[in-house]
Image (cartoon, rainbow, N blue to C red; front, top):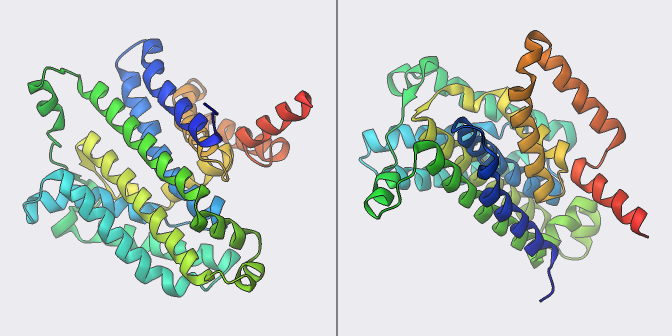
Length: 318
C-alpha cells in the first residue's frame, strides 16, 4: 500500500497521541498535551484560511470565545447537553462568520487583518461587559461533559487528565483528516489557486468571493470547537479566550510551524504551548526568549519549521 502524504500525516498524529503518554513523568502532562491538541485544532482552521486561501484573520479568538461561552450558557439557559452546546457554538460561529465575512472579505491585506481584528475585539468587549449574562472578567463555570462517567460505566476508568488528553487527541485527528481531505478536493485546489492569484483564479472560472467566504466559515468552526473543548476541560471560561493575544497566538503558532502544512501548524502549536512551561526558569525573561526564538525561525526558516526542514532534507537526499 502506498503511503500518501495525507495518510502519513494522520499516522504521525495518531502515533504521537498514542505513544507520548508513555514518556509523561506525571499526570500534569496529560493536561499540557490536551492543551496542545486544543490549540492544534484552532491552528488547523488557520491553515485552511491562511495557508490554503491566503486570507488573514487577527480576530479568530472571537469565535473561540463564542464556542466556549456556548458551553457555559446553553446548558443553563437553554437546557442543552454540553455536547449539543458545542454544536450550537459551532453553528453560531459559522453564521456570524458568514454574515461578517461577506463584507470584510472584500478587503485585502492589512485592511482585512484590521477588520477581522475589530470583530475579535467586539466579541471580547461583549463578553467582558455583559456581566448579567457572562459574569464579565471574572469568568463563568462550565458544566461537566459527562462522557468520562459514561466511559467509566463501560469499564474504562480514566482520570480527568487522561480522558481529555485522548478525547482532544481524537478530535484533533478528525479535524486534521477533514482539512487534509479538503486540501486534495476540487474546493481545496480552488482555494490554493486563489491564494496564488485571485485574478488568475477568477479568470479560470473560480468564484473567488464564495471560496474565500467558505474558508472563513470553516476556519471559524474550527476555532469555535477549540474554544468549546478548552472550556469543557477547564470547567471554567473567561473572556481572555476571545482576547486579542489569543488571536495572535493562533496565527503565530501556524506561521511558526508552517502555515501551509497541517502537521507543521500543529507542530507550531505544540512548541508555543510547551515553551512557556520550559521557560518558567527564566521568569521575567520568558517573553524575551520566546520572541527571540520566533525571530530566529522567521529569519532562517521562513516557510515555517516543518516545511523548511523537509525541504532541506529532500535537498540533501538528492
